[in-house]
Image (cartoon, rainbow, N blue to C red; front, side):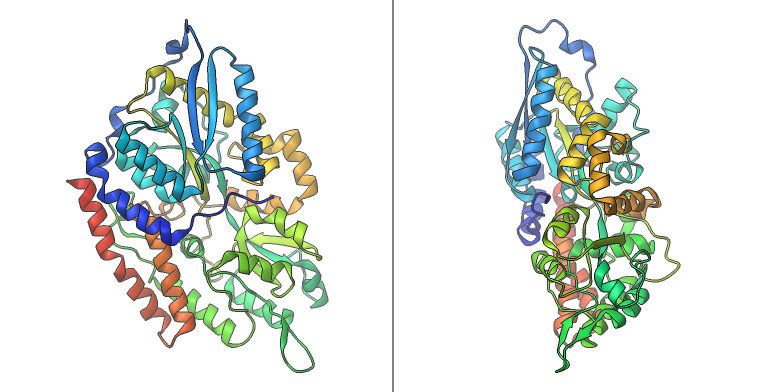
Length: 466
């Protein structure tokens, strides 16, 4: 099973910047005008003449869309004559956000919308949604069983702003057969970059002509991994406490920990211990499943596909630390659910919340996790029959749940909150790739990339502070 395609970062970069510049026209700007929108109580759904209509915009297609449609159908059956949810596929994440922007400008937003993690700051700034915390407080809703690392990411200024739903985290995947053939223990995969190199030296295989036929390591130079390495090293991605004590004014991915990682990556390629992949994650997945690379980095959402496409036994380990002794932690990916309040009736807002509550139940999360491979947002969902059956089929997935449970909850693992986060991810990739494909030192490449974001950050912040 595969997750919905990750957003096309370069197009999303231009999109997010444009969204920021248009915010004042959409909602008056400011630091998140949604604070004036509050959650109505359950009484607004009493004495209805007809079912309240909730349009739900999402980015789930193929198998994931089918699982979501099943949940929608079940909810509607349970709430017949009271609430009717209609799912509407909006394309991939950045397309969905573009459609939402257009809907804001037209004054015709959907009641409920799924927005990817990098759009969080924009959603706050747009001033259209009822903060998730308002529903939690109004109903005394217990978030105790919701995964803490997920709540951490979507909590800003002490308030939960949206509800986590389709979320994942990256892992290190290994070819267990290759490990055994090299005399390595597949049950104890490498935990940091130095250990990966040591293992790669044993895993790299050459033919009689000296040509490498199996590299020890190979992964895409994907910007999400930069965020992950920084979180696990306990350093912020942007200033002002990762944009959570004040608006971010600069990115910090030229930190020595990132430079160390890029230099390590370059040395691995130069020494023919790692295959140079580039930024295409499909190429990295193919290198792993074909046996060309014995270790790789990818999302939890790739596990099912790796197992289906590989003719070897797939293993999984925690995403690596930069160096032994780093504090660890994990940043999530994926998307969350936002309930629009501006332009919607109390009945529509409340009905949307009723549906979100249903999606967050252990029963729904067991079905969702088992059917898609996304994390169970409600940790009790792992005890459901569907999730238990999946655990038996894919015991490797327990590594993802354990990594998240072991994650330190702090500002670094919360991730950077910034209006041009998507552009930042793309620019980090550019700097990383420059270091690998030119004579530019890693420190200079990452510093130059960070400097290129100063103007977009300044322009976005100005657009929402007018």
